[in-house]
Image: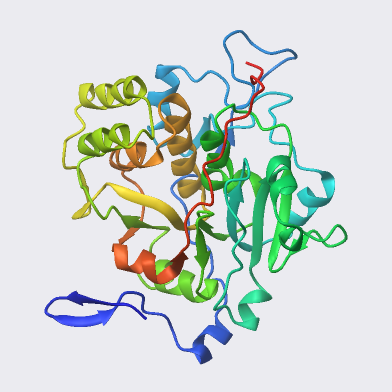
Length: 352
């Protein structure tokens, strides 16, 4: 286990319970939520509304602002808006996703990565936690034969591979944000999830991770602090310098945040708010589901670089029980293998 210096002494970056405790771990009881009924906006009537993206709708700035005003009963934009929103999953896989109570999930759209088998889990966890990888048809066709899922079981090693068709965005980065941020829309009965970017191999027992990063610190969402910067405006400059987003779209987003008074070195509960979101551990509750909807809406409205919108949503939302864990904890969760190649955008233009 990697170690770190904290308060003058060395300690493990990730404090997992013993094997004996892991074998007996069960999901805790749900706690009361300040948010009672969370509904998701859907298109009313037939046909596609003017200037409306079929997957996300056309959220106005007034609706955006209202979505941050937490009320007992709320309706917000959260993807899957139109009658034919895209991101199609067949009936067999849809039925399987409904059986999961906890899940480790990843995605690979556009054939950019290999599939890396998870390691380090106990038999007890395997009986409680699903492992689901979302692919598109490009990835399926480009994956080496020995790494493709079985036609009968749809399993590739420990991963249940779900092939998604009719992806809604021309930008593969935004398509990837659907399973990353909207897991509650895909897994209606899941209580806990771990998101792992496809460049990583997950190497810990998921039940132990839930215990260490959520249950023990009494958090609803765990995410790694950013290792290099704490200022979202400097992060925006770094994103542009690395050609990960267009200067105009970054400027539009950060100019809006600046106009709303978002500070340079934003903090949340004493930690820097800028995060590195390649691993996300969370409980699925109305509050965390709402937070992820708001985060996804910012990613769609502005740039797909979700680290730019996370601190803004976090600070404005304010209700989240967050465990912002150190970088070395994230490194203790995964083996970093890297992307095989950059995913290419789809050639067809989405219906809007």
